[in-house]
Image 1 (cartoon, rainbow over the protein chains, first blue to last red):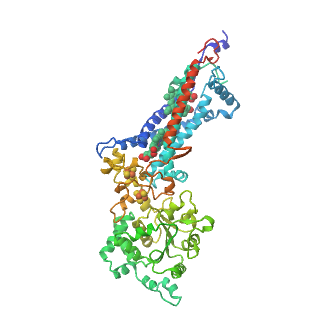
Image 2 (image 1 turned 90 degrees about the vertical axis):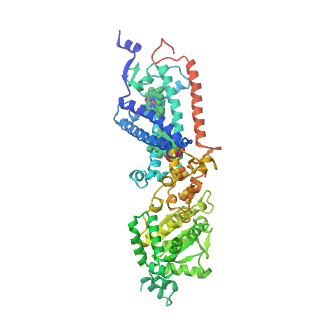
Image 3 (image 1 turned 180 degrees about the vertical axis):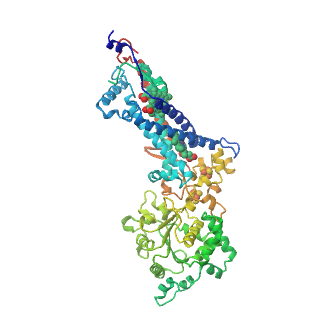
Length: 227
Length: 380
Ligand code: HEM
Ligand code: HEM
Ligand code: SF4
Ligand code: SF4
C-alpha cells in the first residue's frame, strides 16, 4: 500500500486547538451565558425582594462584575495567544479574505453553504466563514468590555479606572454606553445561533470531529498539511 | 485705600457701592444684622457642601471675615430665570442673603433697581473698573446662529456681551444647564444655534454648575471656595466642581437599598411607589447622573426629586434633553427602523430571524447528499 492510498482512506489525527484556545473558548462561553443572564436581570429586573435588607440585585450585579473580570482576563489572554499561539490560533486566520488561498477557501465554503456545491470542503483550522465572523465577535467582546468597565468605573469617579477610560466618556455619553452594552449582546446571540448550528452541521458533514475538537484539541483530516 | 477704590475714585466721584467694599465680608454682615451665630452656621454649612472636613469651618469663617467684597455681575441669556429664582427663593436667609451680601451684585437684570441705559452703564463700569477681578455669573445659553441675532440686551448681542464680560472676568460661573451645556435651547433642532458659555467664549475661565435649576447651595459654595482659597475648585471633565458633581445620584440615593434589594416601583402610584421603592424601572436616570442632589437637596434641604417620588431626569448632564430621554424609560429609543422600536425588539427580531434562517438551512442540508472531503464512496 502506498502512502497516497493511506491518505485516501485514513484520516490523520491532528492537534489544532491548543489548551489556551480551548480554555478561553469555554470560559468565554460560560461568561457570556452568565453575563447575559445577569445582564438581562439588570436590564429588566422584577421585584423579587420581600424586605429592603434583601440583596437580590446586589448579588446579580456582583456576579455580573466578577464574571465580567473573568471574561476580560480570558479575552485578553486569547488576544495574547493570537500573537504567540500556533498557526491555527494566529490573528491572520481571522482574515482569510486577505490571501488568495484564503479567498479560494472562502469561496468553496460559501458555495457549499448556498447549496451550489455538494463537495464538503475540508477545513483544518477555522472554518473560513466562521473565522470572518470571529473577528467581529472579538470586536463585540472589546466593546462590551470597554462599555462595561466605563459604566462600572462611574461608581468611583476620578479613580484610576475612571481616568483610564476617559476616552470612552469623550466618545460616548452615558446613555449611549448603556444602550451599546444593552444591544450588542443581541448580536452575540445571533452569532451563537449561527455558530452552534455551523459546528453541528460541519461535525455531521465533515466527519472530522469538529465539535469534539474544541474540547480535545484534535481534528481528523485527510490532508496531512494545510495544502 | 484698596486698589479697587483707587481706580474708582479716579473718576472724581466716589460710588456708594465702592465704599461698602471697604468693609470686610464679616464686618458687612454684622452691620446688616446677621448674627455671628448665623454666620458661623453658614460657614459650617458651606464647608460641608464643599466636602471639606469640619475643621475647615473656622478657616472659612476667618477668611470670609477678612475678604473684601468682590464685584459680581449676573448675565441672563436664553433662559427661564429659574436659576435666579432658585437663588432668591433659597429659604435659608443665610444661603442667598449672605451670598448677595457678600457679593456686591453690580448688575443683575432681574433684581437690580436701575434700568435701561443706567443699568448698562453700571455693567460697563464694573467690567472696566474691575477688569480681571470681578466674578461673572451666566444664566442661559448663547445663540450663535446668524451672527447671534436671536438675543440681545441694549442693542448688543448675547454673544458680544458674553465675549466682553466673561472674557474679562476673573472667573465665570455658568449656572444651570443652559449656560453650562446649552440646555433646552440647544436641544434638537436647536433653532438658534445655542451653545454653552465655554463654547461661546473658549478663552474664559468657566465653572459649570449645571442643573435645572442650579442648586443655590452649590453656587454659594463655589463662590465661597473662590473667595477663601483664591482659586476655582477642582473640576471634572465637564467643567463641574467635584465637590458637587463628583458622585453619582444613584450612589447616594436614599432609595438605593431598595435598588440593591430588588424592590421596584412598577407603576406610578402602586404599593411600591407608596412605600418609597426604587424608581429604576420608571426610567430614573440617577445611575447616569452626577450631582449632589441626594445629599445637598433643595429648599432648605427639605427634599429633592427622587425623594419626592419622581425619577431623576439627568438634568445636570450635557445634552440631557436629547440624550436622557425618554423621561420614563431607562434606555434611549432606537430610531431609524421606520417605526420607533426599542433595542430589545430589534434584537429579538434579529435572533428569531437568524434561528429561522438556520432552521431552514439545516433542513435543506439534512436532505442534501453531500460528499465528505476526499471520500468518494460514502454519502452523508
Ligand atoms: C459579553 C459580555 C457581557 C454581556 C452580555 C453583558 C450584558 C449586560 C446587560 C444586558 C446589561 C444591562 C444594560 C442596561 O440595560 O443598562 C449590563 C449591564 C452592565 N454590565 Fe454587562 N455585560 C457583559 C460584559 C460586561 C463586562 C465585561 C463588564 C465589566 C465589568 C460589564 C459591566 C456592566 C455594568 C457596570 C452594567 C451596568 C450595571 C448597572 O447599571 O447597574 N458587563 N450588562
Ligand atoms: C456563547 C457561546 C459561544 C461563543 C461566543 C463562541 C465563540 C467562539 C469563537 C470566538 C471561536 C473561535 C475560537 C478562537 O479562535 O479562539 C469558537 C470556536 C469554536 N466553537 Fe464556539 N462559541 C460559543 C459556543 C460554542 C458551543 C456551545 C459549541 C459547541 C457546540 C462551540 C463550538 C466551537 C467549535 C467547534 C469551535 C472551533 C471551530 C472553529 O473555530 O472554526 N462553540 N467559538
Ligand atoms: S431611585 Fe434612581 S437614583 Fe435612586 S436608587 Fe433607584 S435608580 Fe438609583
Ligand atoms: S435629581 Fe436629577 S433631574 Fe433632579 S435636580 Fe438632581 S440631577 Fe436634576
